[in-house]
Image (cartoon, rainbow, N blue to C red; front, side):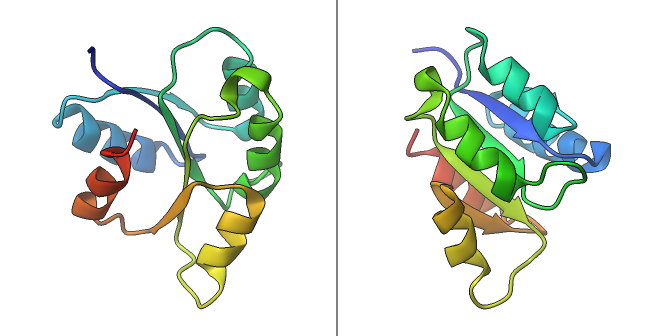
Length: 121
């Protein structure tokens, strides 16, 4: 089986760079989009995506709005979507899960926790 391919959706290039570098060092392939709208267009194609890491706080369309759209793409119904957010208040995890995320991880990202989540894909 080949490397797992992760789509990182984040409006901050620094976050994309840090997550990509971390994941590539652990044998994942990474692709990225800086907006939810661009990600939705990519996800409508036949591009291989084994899991999605999505920032929940982005301009125009945030993760809360984007996740239901991703889940409505027939070929992406079963793609794991992991919410990545700086919001780590009581109830934020539940809010992410209610939006349709598979699971949640707060920023700054705990690499061990991220790898644990991705080990399930």
